[in-house]
Length: 149
Image 1 (cartoon, rainbow, N blue to C red):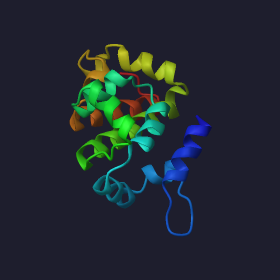
Image 2 (cartoon, helix red, strand yellow):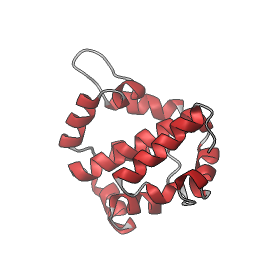
Image 3 (tube, rainbow, N blue to C red):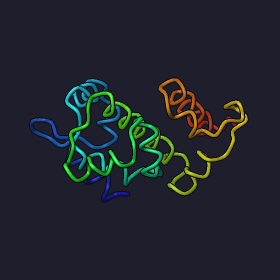
């Protein structure tokens, strides 16, 4: 993970200093600027490697086919703002999930397990839209504060 974070850190630079991955995710202005500009496939690939999500998951989150994702890789496609926003949202979820679960494997198991607090839905099912993402983030926050229901 530290290598992935180092790559992500290198991708987000301000004029005179590097911004860490955590700093980036806590800076709404920088996130907004990045979303408006879009991100290249190479950065998406770095983010994707950091997450517990499969190519199929990403295709569903971005509402594109896996074939399109493969074409994007070959051409180092620049993602549109709408897709960039979703990529960053999933990055935020992953960051929060790994802070609590400490591994992609444990986090993925939680994402795939029906959750009583989320209406017995699997958290990964809720990540397809912003409202569901916020519900998942709130549940991770509750877990990190010791609230288990």
